Picture 1 (cartoon, helix red, strand yellow):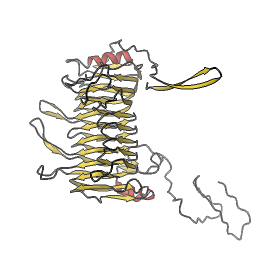
Picture 2: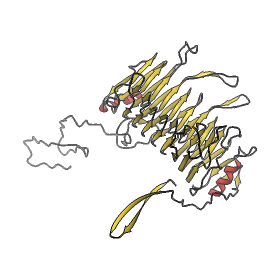
Picture 3: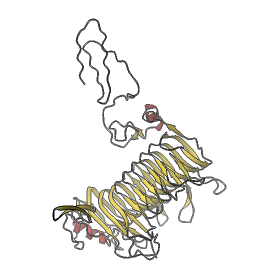
Picture 4: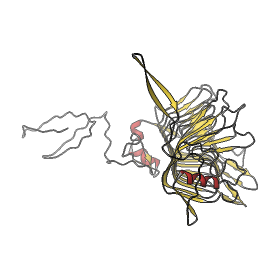
Length: 504
């Protein structure tokens, strides 16, 4: 259960004072934070129905010989706001094996999740915080997590960047993360010296491939949503924070506000390298002191010559939209609705060149930036783009920003086209965006196109612009349906009738 604000009314003499007091509400569960109970296994899969059983399972996943066990939730679980630190599934550091089994939430919710570091974060390693700490070659699916994660900097004596604070997963390599909803709020506390420079995100913070005896497994993040309010110190993302080469992200959405106190922020991700993001959207406010992007702040290519894995990967953004407000702070360099900085590699750096792609995207969110100057790039679609070979079907609301793509090198600055609200809601734009989008029949996106997988049901009525007048002719005993918000002037001209009935 998340923190709540309660108001207590105190009577003093004949006057009343209302004093808001911030407290952490007690959970409705009964777990004491220490009791563990072994669940029964069916077909080698542990059936987990209580907090005590989940705690037992979590501890087992930290073992060198039991990190690959599988579990399935059989009921919703309330962790009773007991501190989860020490129970991170898979452990917190890469030197451990990491969780490598299958965890199936089966559509259930883990509520009352609470995590807060009780000591200084170590400087000799990267610590992964979350319900899961570190996962490798795992399958995590069909789960909602609700609660709060606090990064407490009161113990730090210097700047600290070596941590991943994730609502659900701290770090994932070569894993499949599917149908995960994060409703964990992430905050930074007790940081007057701005020491919190680690990374944060809702579903998973860092993701990359996993190598096991030359067998490469790439990470796939699909059908995930961040609903939590995410506040991080440095790079901060809604669904995830950063990726390594060849990670695929699809059918994801961010609906929780994301803020980076001292760095950059992104709605789907803050930073992607050689990553594909498709069929995804940001609907929330994204704010970063040093820059922000609706889908991504920085989106780049990836290139490697290592023996473990060599190759090159372009960054691809396809079938995405931003409807949230994007705020760049006073130290911003790149701010945009889709990809603030989108960079391929020219042939002078790597031959042959690695060209990023961006297509079938639009922005209707307002783009703001406090910073000014020649080195600040602000655009509705992109701030600064380099080596973009494909930039097609890019549109933006003409009032959202002064430019579609502010500037770039070997990339078209005119690829993004300004449209009016009426035009963006038209059948022509819907057709241009392609099969990844559909009409917003249920008005969940104010009538702008929605992704094909989103639920938006309603009558398929023609849109009638309110600025135009229409003459409608009707025959005898006919019925005309008029929308609730229409303004109607009824003029009757018929020599053969003397009485007319109109019902509104």
